[in-house]
Amino acid sequence: MPKLVEVTWWDANHNGDDMPENKVMSLRPALMHSYGVLLRQDSEMVTVAGNWCQDDDLDRPVYRDTLAIPSAEVVEIKELVEGRDEA
Image (cartoon, rainbow, N blue to C red; front, top):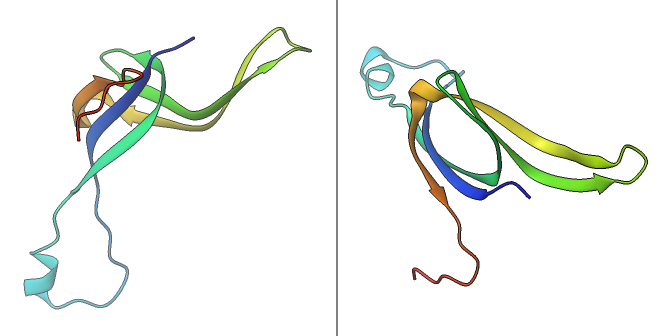
């Protein structure tokens, strides 16, 4: 089974409303936290899936809610360990 991870990464911030220049200048990228199984991690991208199941007809897992994050935007990838409580 793939590793369960938390990926912290920067995403663009968007506002579609009319905004004066001072408000536009205050827009900042959003620091995102995504959780899922790690499917790919290389110099191009990090791919995680929020859901997966075993497809018995195909005899392999299938994935849903996948997210491909450009590696340049990734701040940290933390493996989530079962039974560990950091609170």
